[in-house]
Amino acid sequence: MKYPSLILILIIIVGLVIIFYAVNYNKIVIYKIKIEKAEGDIDEALRQKYDTIARLNVLIKKVVTKKDYLKEYIDLKEKRLTNYDLDRKLTEAVTTILEVKNDYSELDTKEFNKELKTINKINEELTASKNYFNKNTSELNVLIRKFPTNMIAKIHHYTIKPFFDGKNMQDAVLDDFKL
Image 1 (cartoon, helix red, strand yellow):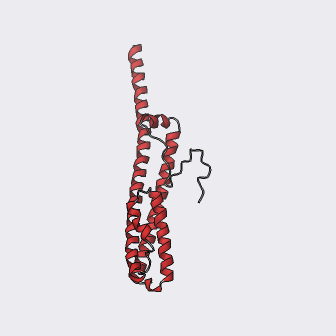
Image 2 (tube, rainbow, N blue to C red):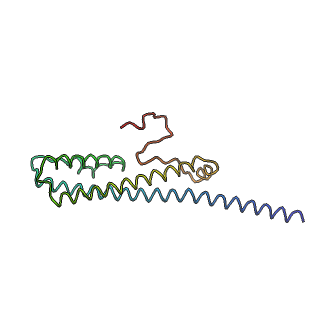
């Protein structure tokens, strides 16, 4: 009589451990999936932003023939940049576009302004996606650091994920927030 109840207790304990493991593993996987979705959204928005800048470049070249203001930004496609670096460069390109527009009133057309509105819409989507990415990265990193989910993360070789800007808050670099 003693052994069947001992076996039953062991089965219950093992079952609870398995359920606990599965629930916590699934939490980690859910955050990984959310982060991957946000990365995909960021990739798509950056491609759209690049394409819109390329269209604006064509419009600028029709008016300004002496200088190619956006050449270095159009050539970004050839370079291997992180999404963060690409985002920064594309933001610089938009600033250049706005400066050129201010210098050449001929660019104040319906088509040009429509493309600028597209850029603004893409920037809003990018901001939302980056915030979503960073929020879920933060949640995932908490799970990876916190006991007992840190043991599950180690078993599956999950490591701390950097935020969108690539900063590692766990390293010894003190000037992560320099602009």
